[in-house]
Image (cartoon, rainbow, N blue to C red; front, side, top):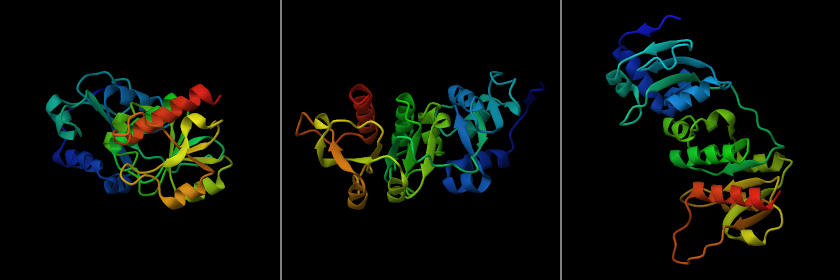
Amino acid sequence: MKIYKGLLTNNEIKRINSLSRKKERTAQGIFIVEGNKNVQEVLNSRYQVKQIYGIDDSFHSSPNFTRINQKQLERISQYKTASEALAIVELPDSVTIDYKTPSIVLEDISDPGNLGTIIRTADWFGIKQVICSLHSVDCYNPKVVSSTKGSLFRTNVVYTDLIDFISASSLPAVATSLAGEDLNSTINLANHNYVFGSESHGISKDLEEACSKSIRIPSFNSQAESLNLAISVGILCGFIHLNCK
């Protein structure tokens, strides 16, 4: 296979950098995947890779590979320290909701790192679907994609109205709330939808009322701040795995 070498034009660099914005990703129908591991993961997935740029020949056998120099990679990277490779990938045409599988449900999550970590955690514990409210951060934000370490390409991430989803799902929903029942006193949380509120405001009253029950992760220090959202998801997933089989 021929390996193309050459300089990216300023217009190409500008177009790639514009993909940091959701509006441009949607308009162009593409998003960025950075890092050798993430690029390899997307190549092994159902996603369609349009272009790969790299500073070495790690992906020379892949279609549409272009070797560029370090300075050019730094100009298109979304990070201060560029990775070895960057791919341009097509956005999926549509995503179908599975109403019969246990899902992590997120209301108005805003931090890209949190969403990426939650998707990675869901993948680790075998949860195949993450449902996000319509105002949550985009899962194709470059920082989200990078922090999933490839888990995004194995996880069904859907944006929809959360109350409608809970109503249509065949599984009961459990809300995480400071006013909820102590997690250690619950009987069985297997095969539920697990609902979490935003980092800043927690779960909304309407969404909590749409759930079958509310639970809380107990604190052992009354002076401690509230848990990070992604950590809360990890604790609940671990609890379910160990206690609710």
